[in-house]
Image (cartoon, rainbow, N blue to C red; front, top):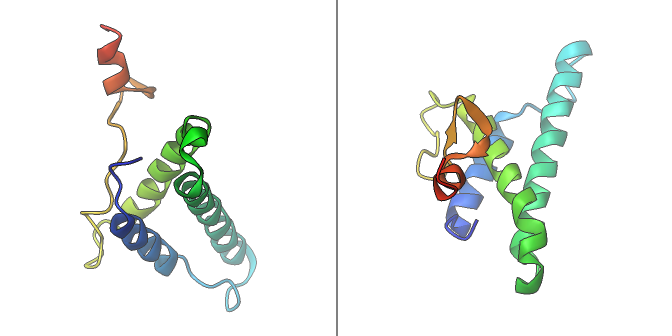
Length: 114
């Protein structure tokens, strides 16, 4: 998480937040979908903010959740990767994942000699 700058965080959060429609004018399934997307994005944002504002001695306890939350925010942003304002420089995953084993970061497997 330390390689993600404050600027990258702000740009990605702003981009994702701006793409999720306001629920007020929507009805039915569209309204529920937008509300769920907004709630999910806000929870991920909160996890990253919590980690970034935690004391250094708690970083180990909050980093895994923050990394997963950041990667989910990046996944949300990639929904709109063809948008002209897509923040490519901010949409950087914290780990590269192998398609054959997506729950295991590639860097971690390499360090285990796998």
